[in-house]
Image (cartoon, rainbow, N blue to C red; front, side, top):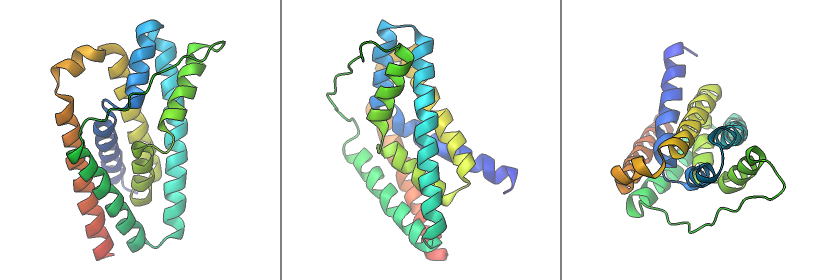
Length: 194
């Protein structure tokens, strides 16, 4: 794969996942924990969780892509991204109402790691990473998605509510929805031209 294609795949993954993750459960988990504990163990726990989760998603997506014909895989990704895009545009602000509970007897690094893994396993961003890994270079997708997730978590930890109060969250979710629709269109074009 050419370096420009690798960079393009990483940048596409970064952009889509970062926009989809702003204001999501994992960012709220990090924000809540960092308000009570030191920032670094929270960020390192979240980073470790995202390395694991995106790695699993990339392996799954690339594995499926190896067995499923390219046209069918691109069609499935197009439908999946279309559904995510419509959902983000119709219902831009998710209200999970989940309470973040600390796991007693464990360090904050381990607590953060477990909470993020449980909250994000099978989440829309993990499914999106699997879909992207079926379309693009898996290592580039993993790098872009992991970087996006860690940076969005860092944003939640350090900037927290100050930044999110100044930026309209519903517009960020709508922008993510538009990107999902764009990626759905690209995958559909790939399915029909394969």
